[in-house]
Amino acid sequence: MKTALTIAGSDCSGGAGIQADIKTMTANNVYAMSVITALTAQNTTGVSGIVNVDTGFVKKQLETVFEDIYPDAIKIGMVSSSEIVDVIEYELTKYKAKNIVLDPVMVATSGAGLIENTAIKSLKEKLFRTAKVITPNILEAEVLSGISIKDDKDMLKAAKIIYENHGCAVLLKGGHSINDANDLLYENGKVKWFFGKRIDNPNTHGSGCTLSSAIASNLAKGYSLEESVKRAKDYISEALLAMLDLGKGSGPLNHAFNIKGEYAKESDNE
Image (cartoon, rainbow, N blue to C red; front, side):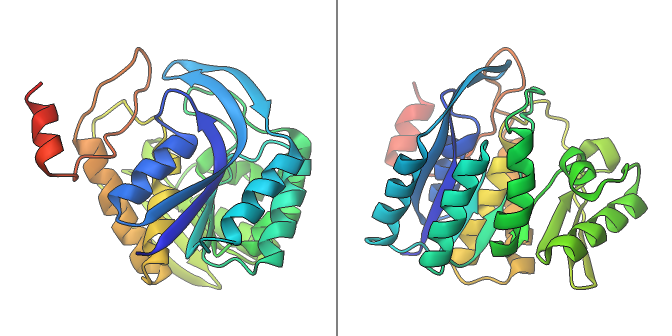
């Protein structure tokens, strides 16, 4: 069985972060492992608290995973301090980590900030260079590129700037703010659009975490980056179409929509 590691923050409500990543990896048939960088108190309405994990313990988690079950792919999510960035970069380099998908998490779906300003600089200078692909949304891409993004042409311009500055492929997520969920993959001058249909579902908590984890899962299974993105887009579309409705705010996706079996049948009948 292929393996994948998520390095991210914990979401106690289960919709985003480590919890969403593990659900996504499991649903995509890879063995999921985790290194927790931060604890968050959050739910579908917002984030009420963040506690960073001690850097020494982040290091210990990474060493413990790599020295026993080497991951075939890695997803990096919430890394809120520059000190934690340093530890992750050092350990990933030491263990020659591969197939790294970096989701530059800066703002939660609810609008809460999740990263220190100094950490953004460290993220760009140290972790981007280790990544096979980064997956910014429009707001994150504006921060990373330094330009305002209003349409598809701006998306292409921003992706090119980010690639030229950092040397990693860029999957820029259009989302409903720009287009009908069309995403742009840019790598070394090669442009690939992934066209999606608008899904009328306000419950998108953890969608960025889910997409990046699904990409990592498919890279772990040996698919190309382009095919991994396509398969991840198909998965997240189905998770949204399942129309799960939980919580008082922007609720989570149904990560388990495609899990069948006796236990699932029993749950459906409850």
